[in-house]
Image (tube, rainbow, N blue to C red; front, top):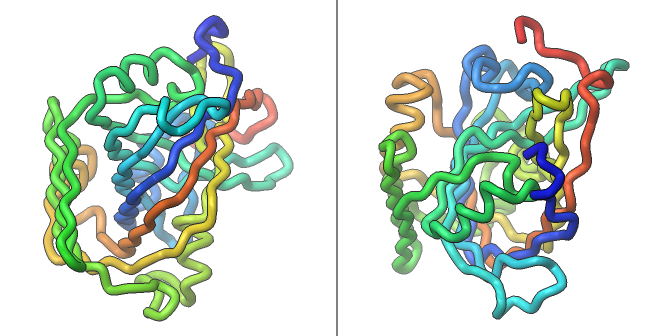
Length: 261
């Protein structure tokens, strides 16, 4: 990440044909153990959150190129809701990627060598998304088995017309806590920097998913033992454009360090 010769100083662009955002509530201390010292768990009503994000990405490419020259692939990311804290106490919310798998080895190769992707490490896995009427089936098989996932869900329709997820008083509170997150952070200890990758996106319409059945190795085997993570919010989004801007570097000397970190 720190090698400037591997930096890609231009925006990257794609369209998510489908996004599934499957969110779990977790104890803040357990999440803190997985985060770098200067990136803190975001806490809401005594809980922290990790989302499994499954995306069908169409036309990933440098922003100056047309979509047909891009790469289309599936990706699954485990992203924690986190925050940075300035020395004066101001919080900047965003996400931190705990694990990432894609089904495109070429994409993984370049993603692990270019800093604009390398805010997390790409693994390679087999990822499938099946949809019939209102039912969806997700299947993920990973080399180390720690990212294996099978989920069976039903689309209930527009989230705006349904009650908010558990833990949240309104749909707006749920969206602002779990969905409206436009910064991804990564820590470079060698250069004492936290990288900030800003995201722009198009308009999206949230649909509520009902979780009918699920197995997630991440939340049942490692790193979260059974019963320490609870599924609470499941969202489906279609046809949403995304732009990843070039990273900026934040010196850790301007940030508060996590206690015990």
